[in-house]
Length: 319
View 1 (cartoon, rainbow, N blue to C red):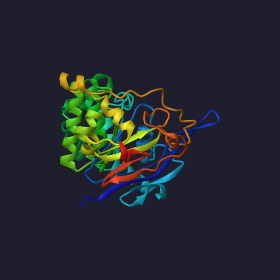
View 2 (spheres, rainbow, N blue to C red):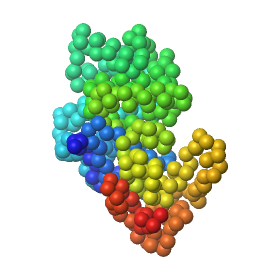
View 3 (cartoon, rainbow, N blue to C red):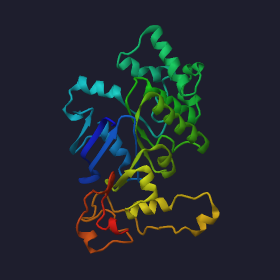
View 4 (cartoon, rainbow, N blue to C red):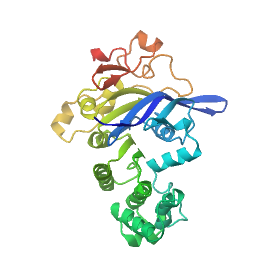
């Protein structure tokens, strides 16, 4: 059996803005095993990135807890938290904004080694050469600065930096959304290769469902800061139970003009509700084509409908 690596329990994150409270993430619970990829999908503003950042304690939580190898991150002192940082890293969405333009590739990759005091002298230089080659770049690139790299190369540099301290867990926050399609495939295959070779665990945040299907073992769907469906990737794509998930999957193009023409697209009405004032019932009720009176009054719990498949919907079993 797989060993549980990281777990978020009822994680809630709110931001005070102009004397109002923006409810970014509400009671999110996720589990990620060693060597597993959990995909987190949803539209822009749904709380994906905030969830990932709060799991790494990069955002302050309102309530809830996160445990790593059974230990609460919020019970750790500074030294213990620093040790956790060595084991958990993040690949950011924008590879240019996340890299200091005044630092060379050598300095950027070496920074985690210096902070955690991992390598010195010849061993340090050998480790830098190993990392830069691991992501498909050449050692002579170590003297270059971020502006001298292409977008795909910068993302590879960001991955090398994230791998420097030999972490067990990576939060990948839309790591390919800013890249060309051809480069996207290279980065995805690189991440998959590293998982097989190094036994890494990923929280892979994206809005691209095709990437999620290829890379993830399980998938969580988030809407307005709430997890509304969670299942194994194959099961979610073959038998989506929540109306929102069904609408998302209906938007994926099929590379067959005959099947594409026969398929029925699901178009959602209106815009998502404001995170400052979410509806009292189901967070999706105002846009759901199947909503009934109870949906506007009572918020459905995330319940298990089949082994490993959880859905937050009053009528999921009927769809």
